Amino acid sequence: MLKVTPKLPVTLTASRAAHNVVLATPHRLLTKEEGTMIMGADVCHKVAGISVAAVVGTTDFSFASYFHEIRGQSPYTLNELKLRSRQSEERIVDLASMTVNILERWKKVHNTLPKTIFYYRDGVSDGQFVNVLTRELNLLEYGFKQIDATYNPQLVIIVGQKRHQTRLWMESGSEKGGGKGKDDKGKGKGKGK
Image (cartoon, rainbow, N blue to C red):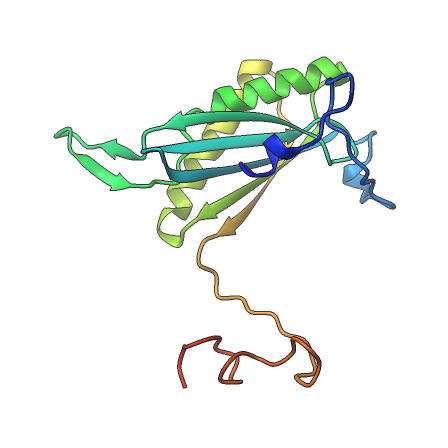
């Protein structure tokens, strides 16, 4: 996400990013009438000694142009003794205000708020899953209430976890790029023989 946002081309008017992608037959939730926004969030660590949190939200119903909010944040937390607790936590400290800014920009373009929000969260490990998602759900809801006390969109949260073990192969090992890995047991390179 941090790599994509700055590279999006801008139209001559610089008002919106240019794109040449359109969904041929979008799902009913992705139609203009449904008013769906897709948001994405991630944290990148050890960038000049800090963590960088980024949140993007679609600008329109092409789902190819995005508003973005980027914040630097401390890569660790302090415990009661003012000692560093954990390095590189996946938390997004300022998620509420980042959400408010993206929603305000959406409202300025569409004169309304989205009815449905798909929130894609990347890079959450098993050990931080519950804490991060509980905290971020609360911050998202707080951001919604900052926009309008009665605003309550349908929220779908989708998480991409770290270090998943999913492997994909072609059906026939004889085709180019086929096979199941180095040892042909489906374990991947250098794992279990």
